[in-house]
Length: 236
Ligand SMILES: [Zn+2]
Ligand SMILES: [Zn+2]
Image (cartoon, rainbow, N blue to C red; front, top):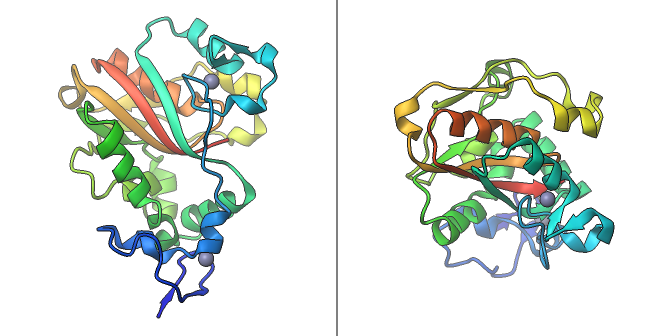
């Protein structure tokens, strides 16, 4: 008998991923899986958000307004695009809270297979995968970096080449415009030779305004990376 990693209900049926090499994959019940909202349909070519939910006035050449602003700020074209698996809904928020703030690493491990499969299928051209680092303070509190766990089976993972420069102020206290216009440096590259000339994929849990990802990409590219892509669990 198995129990669902998320709701603890007994899983009595033979589930979809029974023969998967990823053990975590068949530890989620059908009901929990049905509460996830996979992103589908036409998406913003840059940030990966579903375009169907946006007003037409905010879309230009299949890019959303936020991305058009980012594009104007950063002309270097070195951040290529973000893709996300799921829309950020109450259910996934609840799973992430358990995972990140209550230390339930098993609840988060259920996503390992979606990340690794996607990386192996769609990002073969990538030279290195970088989990977005936590500040030392957060890492100490939490005991683990949730993004590192998702790619623990990925051999191209580059750890410790990017670090946070400061303890972040609570993003939620800031307005959307403030977050987009933030200009302070959030990250620092500590090992230039690891990233030099490489095409990199950055992993994070949530893309909302894109601030974290764009700051990371900017630091990586200005320290020698060739191109930066990102893959996040959710698109807020
Ligand atoms: Zn369940
Ligand atoms: Zn966009």
